[in-house]
Image (tube, rainbow, N blue to C red; front, side, top):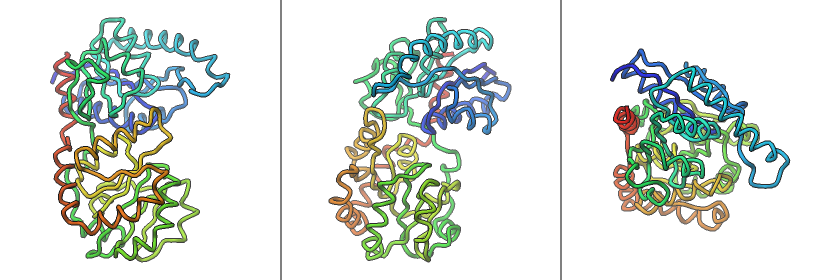
Length: 360
């Protein structure tokens, strides 16, 4: 691959930032002399995360449109206009060969202006239910890299490329399960229920685990539990020999390797990783996301037989029975693992780069 000048725009959440960083890193790996510039939104987490990963970033004034009435919405049209002008100046100054959008507030103005300037553009859509901005931009984009089937409901079919979502490089080859359990101080021969509710934690999942501790222990399971920094002080006193609680887990390769069964939110990036890990799984989609997209993501796995899903309002009624089924029914375990391996796209980042090269 020849060196290129690439603009990547995406942020607001880790689900948009991580794929953007993975794509940029892969470009630099193939062509180290390439220049990559990120574009984010003022005050959003990408403005901190991207520089830490070693890439330059510029900010637009853009922010989201609130669905409930608020005076901040009166500024939204002005912010869009200003952000389009900012995007125009950036594109003219940097002169990229191609522009990639991974979602988030800033990607809309950047991709729209790039299209008006006749630059090649690519969308990387993580979710099974895309946002309105990507649906609008998809009409003139060069390629749309997706992780789920059936996306022709939202995008022009001829532009869709099923590549999967990028996953972290250290998840391609997990450490041995026994050393991973030892890393967390867990018993080596006893099965582990690993619980993760996103980087900040999930109140409903944490409360569920506390209520269901007797059931979990009756099933002879150890617990490896990322409760989130917001909740650690509340739950740290529950730590015991067979209950490991952390506010945040950085060593996700060790976390996944130590697990025998998993409970997780259903963010698109998490599902891509969980598919590659291929272990029996209960998904609890967050209801607090745009267009309920975590539920749609989870159902895409359920339809393939790769997971159980429980909506938050049904946790008390359904969890105990489904967990018992998951832990005791070896046929279901085998079917889930097979289904997840069939869904997995461990080479997603390389596939996206191939699409990018095709547009160049």
